[in-house]
Length: 86
Image (cartoon, rainbow, N blue to C red; front, top):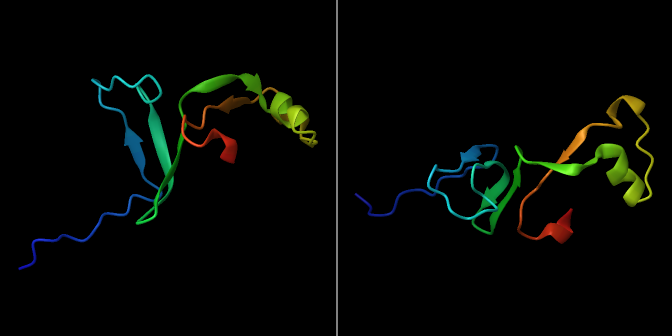
């Protein structure tokens, strides 16, 4: 029997912060893992809305939203790591 277990891939799973999490960026967070591999992980915090609307975000990057019904939809915080990735 091998001492090494197969690595667990958590792509398309949710991580829920433990009650004692002290890191302000992740406390009370639910993270959706978009990608998880031997290279690392990419996830989004899905339960922390920002103070900008979807239309406001599209206006900032000079794009047309194209749907008036989504203008007031909230934009959620993606997370504190590599924020320049979008």
